[in-house]
Image 1 (cartoon, rainbow, N blue to C red):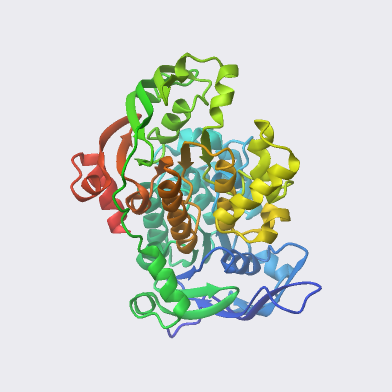
Image 2: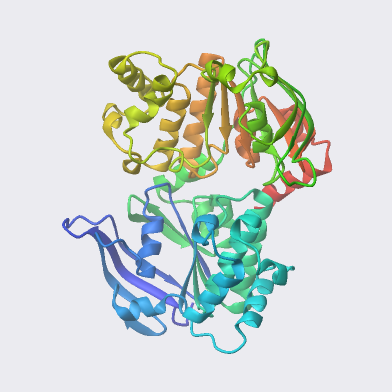
Length: 517
């Protein structure tokens, strides 16, 4: 590149105000117009911290230093001039669109607010429609009157991109923009970002733990590890011949092995003709679905967002207040015929691991309290016994002894998910339900959690329902795969067979989308 970069920073450091040792840096990076720079690394590497420092949005306890240049001039980090860049020169696309959008305000009002903040004059409604159309929303007029919860995850992310474009910025900072999306929707967001980069000449900083994604979109890559840059260069060269051992480890972790064949035991769970209709819905969200699961077996439910995976799992566990029809049998006991009070003793036989490890753990409770919570609920043991059981389970999931008395915010995402797994195992269940348990994790944490789940399945003869939109994760853990589309199972069979020779067109489409990333 011979032209001046759209954004450059030299010696970027972030540290606590009372400590000289930096949490990040010193770091050098630059992005040119029409170029995408990917920043990769596992959880805690400093990716999001670098983004917040560039935006001037660090918490008060942190301070930044370094030489920032944007708009062709030097800018003091944290100054008013730095703040003035936000929205106009620098724009941000957040990871969690649902959390970023105001839940009580319509989409149109939120776009209008951003346009006013960026000094837009004249026909703001027309400009809002133009922005929504620009990000691929064909029903923009209808969308203006909807609330965030009334649109899909992919649509919410497109709205966030429209908000970012409101001030006609030159640099787009995208922080994990597809980590919460299924591959097909995520691919659409990637294509949109790439189109904006090319057509508008935007400089894009893409923060991600998804290495195949970065390889597809970014021309250059910077690898972060514990706040330090360990390698940088052209993406193709870095990924083809990585020089740093850490980069090689990241790339190796992204290559997940196939699950070894398992010896399934006796039938544990059976659902026949399950159907679910939510209140005021015109049709069933789940349509006459059946499944069977044996001890020591993992069944992966795969499909894109809205296909009915989580609805099927919740209906099977009797966790829905919606109208549920059909029969559910757990180890010979007909759950569908039991009243809620009679269900409670049986719930100790089922553990659940949720998608977001931070949201699923109480931030005010220490790890020992979190893991022991199911024991307290079911009246198992006294406090010393419960604490000892928590310590044992934390060792089982690979956490150190000092983890007992730490809070969730003191752990990484992968460690928090290990705590969630320990909690799910507290009552020694027969069945473990994992709802997108690895989708929010970086490659190394994802591989570690999948290995842990595989070991637990083998050692404890656990039956696992593994809900995922990640075909690679399904291949690593599942013995059988059930593919869901529009509330139905359209294909089921041994994992190797479904992935190698899919019989249904929808399954082939899902596999083709992942292969394209």
